[in-house]
Amino acid sequence: KAGVTQTPRYLIKTRGQQVTLSCSPISGHRSVSWYQQTPGQGLQFLFEYFSETQRNKGNFPGRFSGRQFSNSRSEMNVSTLELGDSALYLCASKMETYEQYFGPGTRLTVT
Amino acid sequence: LAKTTQPISMDSYEGQEVNITCSHNNIATNDYITWHQQFPSQGPRFIIQGYKTKVTNEVASLFIPADRKSSTLSLPRVSLSDTAVYYCLDTGGFKTIFGAGTRLFVKA
Image (cartoon, rainbow over all chains, first blue to last red; front, side, top):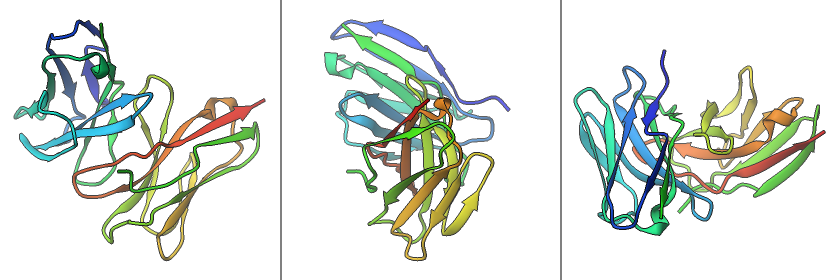
């Protein structure tokens, strides 16, 4: 069974630009969560989608948004990028149990 | 805010058994206790999960006392490749909160 995939793996953007990251969950998993990981703040929860609906949201500004498609694939968008948005962005998928499977992450660098 | 508390770092030597303890002071009745392992620049990897008592798999053992306010991850005979950050979590509901994790450094 294929794992969680994320594209792109690496990305460099400049301040003020916007970016879209993609996540394909494990087949059959309907829940997709997004996390931001930085050296200073650790792993922080962004939001979770289930059956195309956002079920929960972390404490991030509105510049961070996401969506989920009918095939459970999810995208995360960050608008008006700031230097502090440089991070590893991880998505994780799961079925109804609590065992989450993480993807390899997208390394975003904002210059 | 993280719901769990664990040591920031631990050192060990190859071949030793390592026990990492976590406090789950606010665990909900329906929450499970889950441990993940993370290597640099990779996503966390699920290690083990339990509700109470003891769970063992091919990688680790998890000990959870009756009050469920703590858990202990036991890694038998660690090797250099077990050097990583280990996270304990209360998992349930829709939001999974990661703490700072425990950085385990295995020395030769």
